[in-house]
Length: 269
Ligand SMILES: [Zn+2]
Ligand SMILES: [Zn+2]
Figure 1 (cartoon, rainbow, N blue to C red):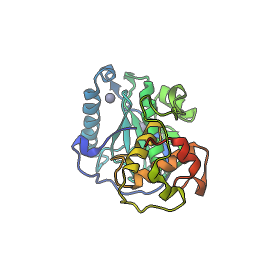
Figure 2 (cartoon, helix red, strand yellow):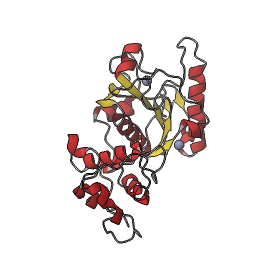
Figure 3 (cartoon, rainbow, N blue to C red):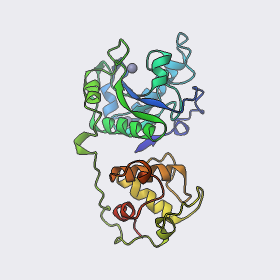
Figure 4 (cartoon, rainbow, N blue to C red):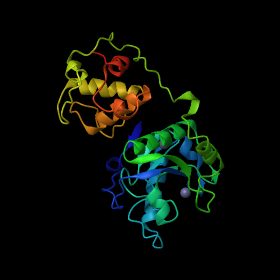
């Protein structure tokens, strides 16, 4: 996941109301013409996102406290933080709809750039998975579901109706270690959690850095910061995502690592 945080955007903490759970996520588009310049200039994506926030803050009718979306996704596969996690969106049309789904906008519009490139779809999917790990349920819908609007436009809505799959079978990133990775051996420090013990959050070890890098490589990174060397909630969330990817559910997918998923992850020594 390629996350651009509010801090990186130079924005203060979101003043939007907290909301710790929702039924799922709704997908949006800009609904205006969007320049195809975004395809070749990532700086233009950042400017676009900042301008969306500016226009929302200037919208006296809505009285927005912040950009209305939880996240945006750009053509280069970046997930751009908006209100972020556990914040109520202002984008779904009315308060009841805002309470039932979080909101992610793809930076495509009604003319100009209308077709979401594959990296954008991956980034929206990253955002959906990130929100699911932080209180969102499994529903994936479009803004037009339950509200009279063309949003999120034809191409994005068709993708939503298919269940928002990762493009190009990207769903199963290779679990093989990248070329040049030292020969795999179970990391010697791993025994302390492979026997079922739960290292406390905040415990420091190079193993958490090595583990986190592999979790990112297999598409399970849930980091906004890190990985490592301190064990954090993001490491736990990432590892649980990995165990779910390996087919475990419920308590079996919970931290700490199981031997099978640990061996399959191939954390280099
Ligand atoms: Zn919308
Ligand atoms: Zn971009």
